[in-house]
Amino acid sequence: MRKTIYSFSLFCASMLALSCSDDSASDDFEEVNGNVEQKLIKSMSLVSAQDSDENESIVLSYNTNGSLNTITTGDDTSIFVYENSELTNISGGGDTFNMEELYESPYDAFETGDVLEYDENGNPELLEFREDEYDYDMDDYVTKLYTAELVYDDAPNPFYYTLQAGGLIDVLDGVQLNFSVNPQLPEIVQARLLFPVNNLSQIIYKDEEGEIVYTINANFVYDEDNYPTSATVTAVSSDYDDQDTFTTTFTYVE
Image 1 (tube, helix red, strand yellow):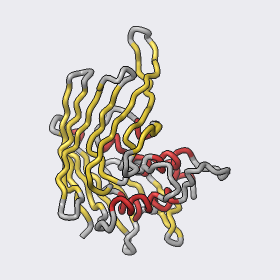
Image 2: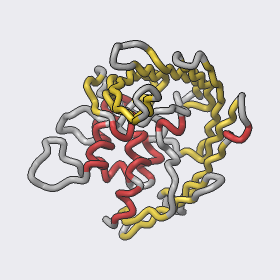
Image 3: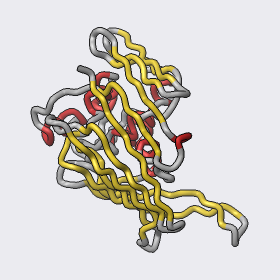
């Protein structure tokens, strides 16, 4: 694959995770969710209750064969290129499905974090990550250690079949988590380790002392197939005694 697909690794790293087993990402998803309806996301919208400048609309288009064609936001368009039905390139830019972007998080746990624990379904439930922050007393940047505790609803990852339509599940299925001698890109391995089979509904960030510094809660409304149609997301900062709320809506290909 060409380099551009790897530069877009945040796209899959944000939404994908898996425990360190010999099973593929698709095997784990199907084992947990069973014969779930296959739905492709057509659009998502995010509306902030505080600042309309933060509002965003994401539109996805598909080719006649069902493969993902483009992902468009107000500023960026990512174009998926295939050869013999295999994804070979993603041009354009943007972190459309970056978890922290979707949940308006101030941290980068899903880009750099290490998975410490998984739940019984194989979802990552405890991450450890580091952030460089400016210390005014020291007049310099210092590295601080944080953890992120993740909670999931009993619903399938709604992005799974959309990612599959873009060839990204095939990319993850090709990762060998036994870390054989075959070279593997760290970004793709990270994506493989961070693949949730269920739908993320809560993130609790804690500092080195175990004190809660930031909490994100997503209250989802689901359709008859257990796919989210909307959510109200509330983010609370303990450090600044601040709270933000936004809503997101999902539509799917008919």
